Image 1: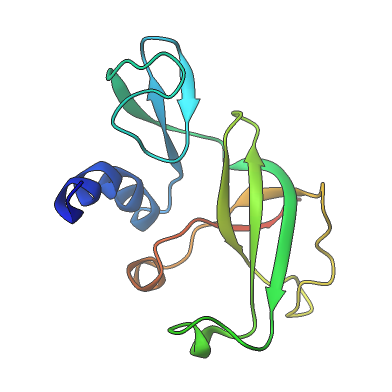
Image 2: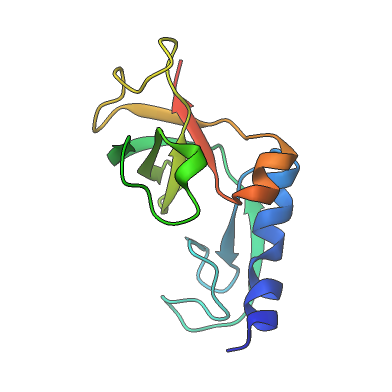
Length: 136
């Protein structure tokens, strides 16, 4: 698949992030949510897919705080945290985690409730990923 094909597939997701919204793909044929974007449903193999807004609430399954040795291109981001979030709508995705009130991630724990809290448009342009914070 060409980069252009992948860009066309993912652009609705990135456009939603730039608007401060979180969306996932939805299969109209089998009525299931899908993440990450695909050309056909992985469950029923139909291509009748759309995008739907989701609540953005879910459970943090795992996370890592990167303090040293970041991958190339992420040196200016250190420290930062990433986590796997399972949304209440049934799909899971990797996202960035906002620091807690102390400016660190010490209050985060596996199985904690989290909620989508979008980043600025500039940050989304730089790193197009969903951002989450502790719920409540």
